[in-house]
Length: 97
Length: 222
Image 1: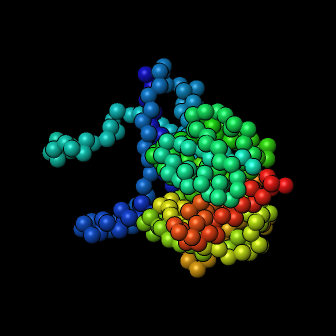
Image 2: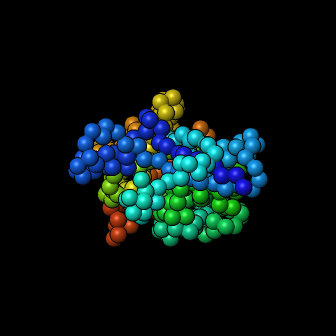
Image 3: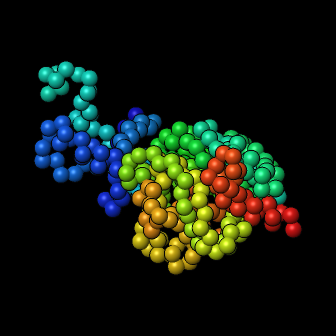
């Protein structure tokens, strides 16, 4: 089983109202010094077989065909690294560190 | 003139669109997203709503619906296609129209009677309007901001492919105040405002929207 992560982000020149909303909310919550926030999407994709160039190319095709709209978004594809497993937001603070 | 109206899961305005077609003198034909069959209609309307729940991106899933394979092929062959609101988003995702629709710059859903100028009356959908006619048509959208890169905008402007432009206020951050565009051939039109909601005095902001359906109905009567 090969696992990939596709990150999709709005292009720099495209206004990102959601990112702007988060940017506006952070100072209100006491987080200072935040100069920009962009909001995107993350896809975790599992495919049968081993990680190789062909699989990676296939995932890249998935991204440009469906996951991202190249008119307004760009994407990156990389192999899923267990070491960057996202922290469980529901976990106890001490356990997550 | 038989005008097909596609229903996707999550379409809201398919019934209104069909009613507008009938009020304009056409015959409305129901088309279903899962059927790769256009029932030999003379034109197609992709109505507003939230097809497939707007999952992923507005129109991104609908683009791959079986009926859309047929719509895209027929549109490339010249079939008149009108995409309203979510329909406009689907047409952009399908690459029948350039650009994309993004979240309103002010982040709020907008619902208002919107003044527009019909700048291109050479499409089958706008032929009943005088050039530069100023009309009022209902607008309601959360993701109606039209964006495209600068070369695309210049082409749209230079080739007269901006079909409708917002007047008075820009309600959603659309570049160049663009409310609607057409393809190179002029048979495919995408429009963010809802002409199907402006077809009867009783329920809408006048009847200025009727023209979008009347032009085609008149073609069929010849």
